[in-house]
Amino acid sequence: MNKTHKKSGQGLVEYALIIGLIALAAVIALTNLGTKITDGFYARIQSNVDVAEQTITEAP
Image 1 (tube, rainbow, N blue to C red):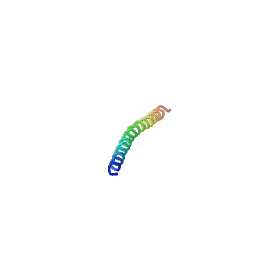
Image 2: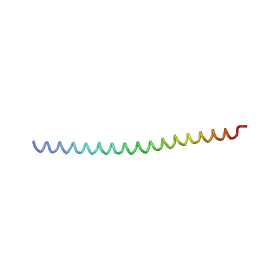
Image 3: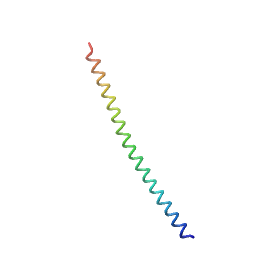
Image 4: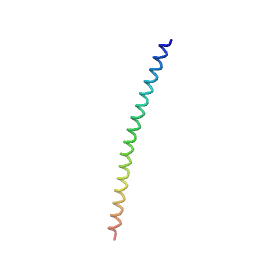
């Protein structure tokens, strides 16, 4: 009975490590993706502001 319990505990630790690694990978991936989305969003805003400034400057 002691051997079975030891194997069961080992399996739980392995699953916990796998879940932890998957969670870490997800956090890293989402952080990188969020940065790319944010950079693209701000670039679009800056582009629109530049066009608006140019339009105002060229207006008679």
